[in-house]
Length: 223
Image (cartoon, rainbow, N blue to C red; front, top):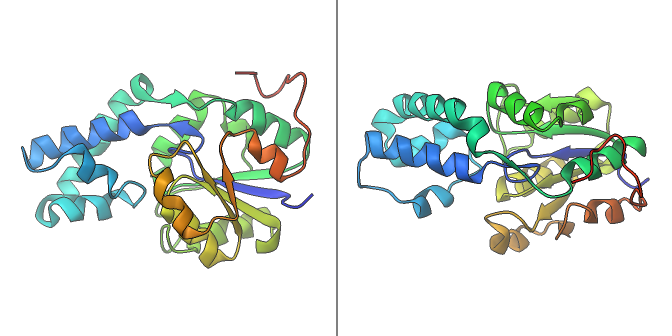
């Protein structure tokens, strides 16, 4: 098997948190910087660590804005978050084929675990690395390197799947292969970061690994 280890970003890759993120940002920005920013301003920096994003909007209030965001985000998490098509189906098939998987996210652990558990994705993951658990967040390679260490994986055995330039840059710096997803809000810009693969559908991942799709999927819960 070409990649016996696969790492995934979470938001925008495995689960659709786009509406939640935008709602939490706009709630925060309207509370702290009323009338100053739009959703377009938020989309331009999605994928960065949250504090870095807030410092872009107002350095003087950044820490308070993070707290406002967290409160809204947790309170409304399950109301907004949705599944992407075929994610559980494919993760179930990868697991059956013996692929070891993990999540590397620039979000804090509490909300990462909420998202994974909401759709039963936590059962597929051997490792979960969240913001603050490695020295530097994506786009630096530290989080990916920590995941490799915990999995006992070599870079050349590993594929990183993500929806943002931060995922692709981190993969390159960690010397692992990368796959960009077409369902990203930033899909149009991802080609310039030279991903090794571009997934138009989650099931394309099975083709990359040359794993046949299941006709029945008792573990992955068909979608």
